[in-house]
Amino acid sequence: MSDPYAGHVTPGGPSEVRVLPALTIRKASVSEQDNNAYLLTSTATGDQLLIDAADSPDRVLALLAEGTGTLSSVVTTHQHWDHHRALPQVVEATGARTAAGADDADALPVPVDVRLGQGDTVTFGDITLDVVHLRGHTPGSVALAYHDPDGHTHLFTGDSLFPGGLGNTKLPGQSFASLIEDVTTRVFDVYDDDTWVYPGHGDDTTLGAERPHLQEWHDRGW
Image (cartoon, rainbow, N blue to C red; front, side, top):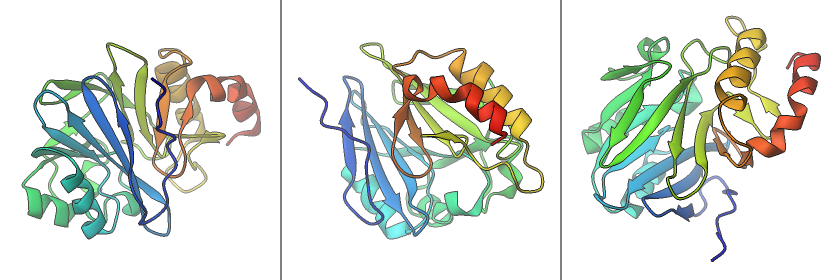
């Protein structure tokens, strides 16, 4: 059966839903920045994890209600303000634990329960996600990888990797050299071309679609 999921959502519009054997992924867009929020639901247990409570608390809470169980954790991919504007309200409403990259945690508007680093894992219900630390857009940016035992890898990259290139590295404290190094060695050198990429804004992509452009990105410096 073909997968109807396309990965395109609009701010305030309906969620896109991808149903895998062990995990359901829901994607919604909030705010004028077209921020993506992702709700992951374990098929077996109903436990849920949210990636980026970016904005519009009512819309994010409605996204949670589309799922089937309790929200275990909220993972914030990085410290930039547009990715955590709804975090205090979501935590207050759900009591969920919070997690973020260790080097970004102190910049978030709520206390962070779990500080993440390269090689760590995040678990909810029977689902385990691998943590990939990608330095450069922010010091503590993290991606999360779900390895579907019946399919390909699903990689949630925050603002570190998009269709067409890397996240912004032109502001003070950012580093293109660090980001291209980490994305190359920790993502493209590790995961197959069929890995599906869910970015922090806009539409999805695959590593296979982006891999031919790595040298181009390196040469242009952004």
